[in-house]
Every structure is written in C-alpha cells, then in structure tokens.
Length: 207
Image 1 (tube, helix red, strand yellow):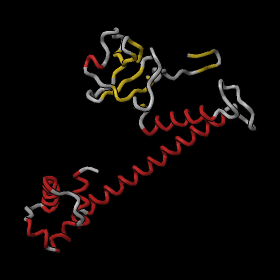
Image 2 (cartoon, one colour):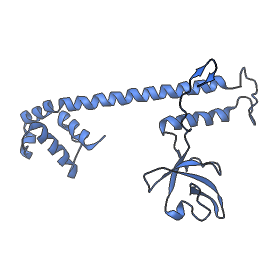
Image 3 (cartoon, one colour):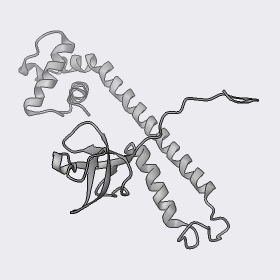
Image 4 (cartoon, helix red, strand yellow):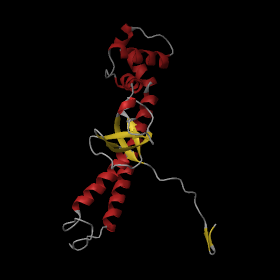
C-alpha cells in the first residue's frame, strides 16, 4: 500500500495511518480535495472531518475496487497453477499404484512430482526467478541472472572455476566472474524460449 493510498484511507475513515514526516502527505491530500488550506485545529472539527470523508469517498472506493481486482487476479493465477499441476499429474506414468519407468523412482515418482509442483508455483508466484539460496543452476547452461546491486537482468552462466563454482556474464572467461565485476547474483531463471511466428498449415504443408 502506498502512502497516497494510506492518506486516502485515513481521510475517509479517520484512522491514523501516517505520522511524522509522512503526515504531510495526508495534509497535502486533504487540502487538495477540499480546495483550500486546512489548519491543524480544523482536524478536531467533526464537520470538517465529515466533509473530508465525503470528498475522499470516491478515491477510497477506487482503492477498494483495485484490491478486489487484485484478489480476483490472484484467484485466477491459482486456478492456472492448479490446472497445470493437474495436467502434469494426468501425464504421469504412475497409474494404479504401478512403478513408473522414471529413473530412480520408487512406487510413484513422488520426488519428481514435488519438484514439478515447486517449479510451477515459482513460475507463477515469482515470475520464474529462483533464489540462489534455494537452488543453484546446472553448470554451463546459459541462464538469466538477477542482481542485488544492478537493476537489469543479464544473460550468464554458472560453472566451476579454480575456487569452486561461480557466475559469469555471457561468454566471459575464467577471470571475469560476476563478483570480480562487483555484480552480486541473488536469483536466476532459465532463458525463455525463442519467439516462433505462427505458421499456417495447409494440405500441401507449412506456408
């Protein structure tokens, strides 16, 4: 919630949500909607406060509508997750308590299922980013890197060096690790699939 939203809710409900220097945001807002200067002693006047509440009502309702939309989007996102999990389950080769042919599986491939569900949730809830504290990428695969001290993600890789393993940008050699360039990786994600234009299929083949 932004300070402007807090100021609006404060104006409509009378519940104090901003103090200290942030109180000025509330003060500026109520002066804006009232169209005149508001003096401190007026905040103890019920008639003034009722007028402020009335004039802030539409802004307050707009916040409520946005919150409802956010909740609906969250529900829709969860529905997508559940559908994808269901589709993964339907494709699973473990049926009728039989041992599937997935390598190293025992009974149902439970570990694989948990890993797959985790990947699906990460994709929707964190836009596919995987914190380095949670899991590190495989060696020598190009990935997208996120940094604590740089705002743009960059393509890089993770591989073994003389001191262990390290992150590198693009095709940088062994001496140019991300840390050596003062770039601190906090998360990574697989590269997205390349763009493929839609192709029309006719009776003679693909156009």
